[in-house]
Image (tube, rainbow, N blue to C red; front, top):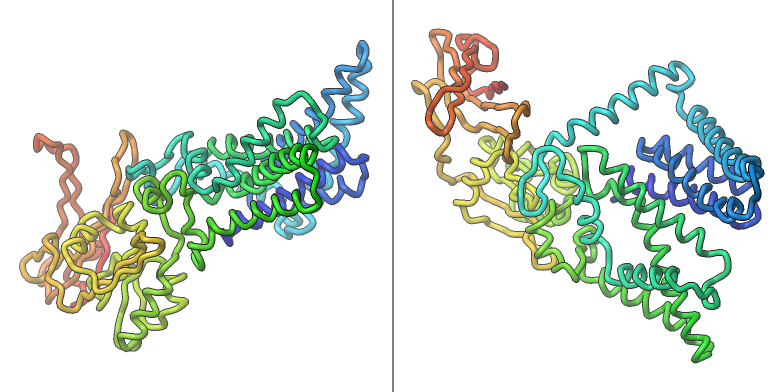
Length: 471
């Protein structure tokens, strides 16, 4: 999660906490200005940072509700403007100033720049990922649905946080304020609002990944901490001891560390043990952000001559090639590789193509990289491997070495590409056409496509060169 989402999470949390300090800790203008600066930086980092606007608006409304109840007649409107609306508008204006001041494109063409940002966001919201997701045991092309973020949050959170949230809920339901730190109810509710609203707004987009939800995690972690503090205050009221609070908090921290320690140094391989850990997560969610590929690269460096060994690998432009300095190519070009390294989310999503993954399943990996008992990478020696069943020769002059198409279900109205990879085996004395037919289960022809392969006359093809044909 060392990505834009991590930075976005930091700026959003800082903006939120400073605005809550403004609302509940004396309305100091430096808190409002600091919050606006952090918000502007969040908007510059990633478009979902704009979700702070409705979140801040709701928080201002929540803070004003007690004043509204005490107001008489129409006097509440003036108070509402002064206490809620005007500060929020000033906050948005200051954030916009930061946004414009730190992005030179906004100096030159502000309207055009904003149109491009909104156009890309709209495209993501409608079209989703170009690659499929693996979710609930199925390969999904497009939107995985509204259950995606709640379930991925459950898989990524810890038992400690879940317990703290339950305790915080019980604290919130208790009408007695004797054990509750003064002035915390509103801010805690605001943090819950931030986490939930952010999750709901993310769900409007068809493009979903677990890391997009990162800003919700620290907000809920603070709410969980509030739950533990409430229990600690109750305990101290009955059993006063100097060491009790520090000992209890220390125990919580140690428990949290104990849950994470087995994942060292691949902390992103953590999954909630209450749901079955990584073994069960591999059956439900898309796994892997490159963990273990460093081990695969080191193995090949130690056993092979890097200058003479070409490797096909997933995440070839990082992190694999950070550790392997020889020739690294995409897995779809496995034909030209001496070794191929496949990754866990390749198997899950059957990428780059089902038939390539099925072919590799018939081979025995030379090396398997496992993390916490779950296989993350397989290394195959292709030098002496037999041809795959789908490799086809036409007239001893053209060879089909691979083809790719969507690995999941194809929905009605969905557009998709079919890519054929062809090699010229020898001189071609005439121009050939490629005929592609789409038939249903009964063999009835639904579509027919005929064109020059790769869009180039075959008499001009050079021997042993790879040609791509995309339909």
